[in-house]
Image 1: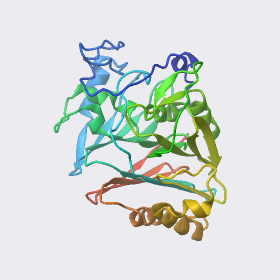
Image 2: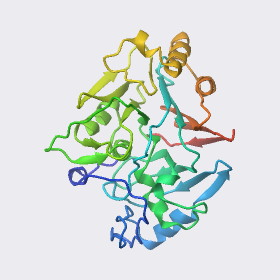
Image 3: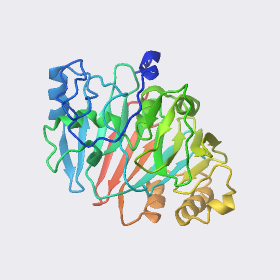
Image 4: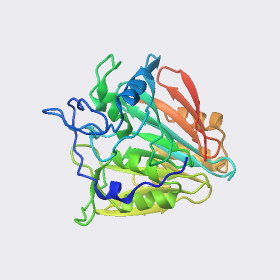
Length: 334
């Protein structure tokens, strides 16, 4: 359901750095740090913590887990993902049919456990997102691990109840120039702020423009956004400046090469971008989930961990993991 994200929450954002330690013994309504560790994001009472951790279940041998986060969290504290080497990802939006816009992505990375996470914060939009659990610092058996309470802070892709979807990919050429008048947020954490507060691409871009991004300790990134109207945009950082390129022609794609200000012919020299662009443009940007997954399969790599499609109007989420298992989820749209 629609709620208003308090302006003070965004105004209090801190610079977020990589942490691999314990996320704290989060007491209800507080973020008390554990000695040597960061504060927890949880703003849950004891019963909500118990319900959240009890909802964790293993789905397949990726391993893939699923969890429903119950209660509130503070998106300005906790851990942030700063991986030591670049992601290799493939993303696209197919919006040739305005009634069935679709967001698709491959997440290509190390062989880590993944988590399908449902969130419904009291001051933001409900969402489904995917998390690489290794950045929470959890062990091989995550059952009962309170570090899972920081899972909302690390969405590597996701969609909210308004049909706003976002995903990231490495962009080695990206650079940022901090604006001292803006708060700084981690390069993965920004996805949580977008999912919680943005209903449209324009609103999502505005979240980016209100913040500095911190790429220290991890790969520089660029981002693909899309919403239920079929609008889409790539957000990149060129010569230190945030730049936005809007989607045209019913589709937009992103891999690990810059797109802002780059001619389409040159973009297609990238193998994965070229395959996606060819397939989606031939289809006129009209793809259902089955067809979109075939395109994702054509650009899979040996280290692709998951392939996912988000129906931006239907709310349908279809997930295929590296083990070949398929899961379907339904997000209630508002």
